[in-house]
Image 1 (tube, rainbow, N blue to C red):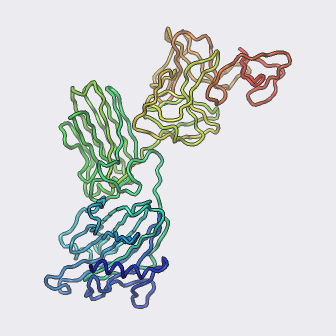
Image 2 (image 1 turned 135 degrees about the horizontal axis):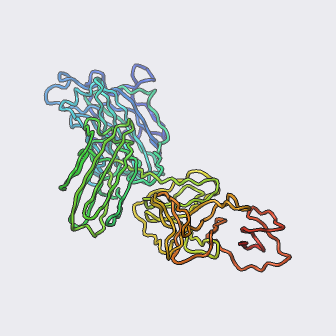
Image 3 (image 1 turned 45 degrees about the vertical axis):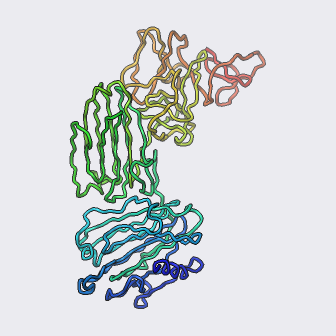
Length: 555
């Protein structure tokens, strides 16, 4: 009852969204004293800060120095609550609040009235001292209340007088996150804090950016195994490659990334989290390098991760190389064999908690010729590619020109593609876990970095520049002939391969329409001929022209 009476009383001090100061300290507007300097105040007896209004998508930051009672000041049998922070909701006459506390009850969040509905995202910390009260006496505290959508994330970063640091974080949901303000406040008991008003600010919440595919929550909240995961299918004798950045809240809880491999009853966890850096719950050969738990939590935040999962028969080889922002390298290798799964698909699953992963995109470079072949080891999502990039599969040809089908969504790893962009430059394509898009009928074959040459019963074309008079510098697919030169096709490029014999020595793909071909056109002495730049041509020679609104090729 006392708590509810206090909350009603506190509400009355918030008028029209204006922050009303409930205390002052030595008439110094640059600082506010909360509690009594002799640490004699009780919890409901004036040791309260002003109320702070936090609007949707705003962040409140409060910096203060925390002082606690000594043994003599506390006396025998008296509890100590130190400083506490909370947010309060009075919407629809319903009280909803959460306390974040550093006191005699330890270092944890505490909720009332809706405890069963709380999302206990993160609350414990590493290196929690036995005598916490003494450890944080005189400590500098940075407290933030961050609203991101419906979530409110409360963080405390404490630096003691001996430069020991503690981080505490808690998140929960308040309303729809767009229509109403919430209230935040600080309190003390048998302690006092001095708030530095010059470093107390409310600003627009900064939402982290990501460049590829997001797994987890940008708020760094999220529960392990409850939606923050993505699956990758690895077929027999295939290799899955992943490249991502790892962002962690650095709380001492499940966090960073965890890789699960699962097939029936076969189960493996490969992890970089509070439990360490290694493989768990399975038998196999695991080796790790440079693991230092003392700095591990910090080193994982913002790190680049390169991961390869290679299947060769019944053997699975996993390599995870993680490079921190200060260039520390952690390498983890794991190998196991299981004849039961040699011929079956396995699932590789990435999971996060109190973190998010930015699965980095693949970059395609388009030259001044505007066209390029392309292939990737990753499944890709072209619906989220850099604006201006178009992708096609080649499904056939019509005389001397290819027929192409646009790609508007995802494609599986290893798909040969033809890309177009009006402006040269680098274009990003996000990686996805798995694509079910059919590539049946696609004539583009991904390169391997090896030479490609003539083969019987098939016709192959590689991308190249025409060097003949009148067409020099024209990009086209050029036929590989018996006895002719071979071409090296890089692993990120592709070449054309048709069944049977195709007579055309070269195939063009001018324009960027969905289908390119040469139609039957009535051409007579009165027809006007134009080149692809729109200039009229009086005496057309070999090449591609526009006649009566149709494309015509002169062989």
